[in-house]
Length: 117
Image (cartoon, rainbow, N blue to C red; front, side):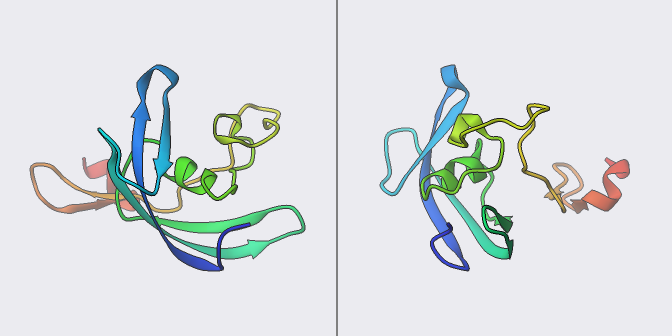
């Protein structure tokens, strides 16, 4: 269960390249980078929660690592602690919206106009 219905998670993430995994800690470590995200529970069943996550930083496996620190594992995500895989090997992590600043034009590009890149 998430720590509360909504909140902000702040951790220091350390990437371990040989395992292609990141670890989230509350205290800064050598070569760690701060990761911040907002989350909100928007649905729940007996066994699962549907979370809306807003990334405030973009770190390697950030959502997976930060949620795992609270024992909130993404369905099918064996790497970060879920007990069994999905039948097709996928995990239940999906993007509803994506945007970034274009490196040359300095304009915001969103999911709906990625054809312009």
